[in-house]
Length: 189
Image (cartoon, rainbow, N blue to C red; front, side, top):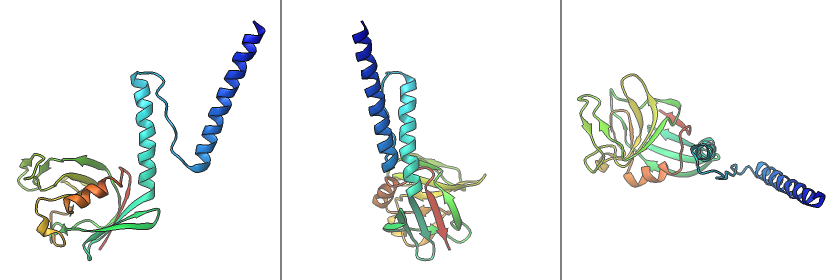
């Protein structure tokens, strides 16, 4: 009986020691926390979603977007190193893209669009002027401003939007994969 208890305690000690070493190694390397699915219940799913949110939060801290309105381009920086620059369309006179420092507030695949003047709603698809992705970074009581694709690609490089930053659909899809809610967006005049 004492031998079984000694084996059980030894096994438990080794398990805790191994877990401690794994946690210490992750902490030293800055790797995201591991998550284990021990129970097939909603509490486990909540823990898994929280672990995913930590990874997204880490991505938001290392990536930033810088829009240069005068050059009509957005640059993606990762850990202060330029990754890529994309051409954009910006807000027209009377609907200027706001300048300043913002955070990504929401992201959506295949968004619907509501016209800012007529309030008509256009569902996702090829007739939708938002294209395939939406990355919102500014809003007030009257509307939102963000990055989005377009069904009018000939307008890229111009000041023609209602304040939003239009991009080629393939460019917004690539950028969408690199950012998360909380990513810094800097808009320069």
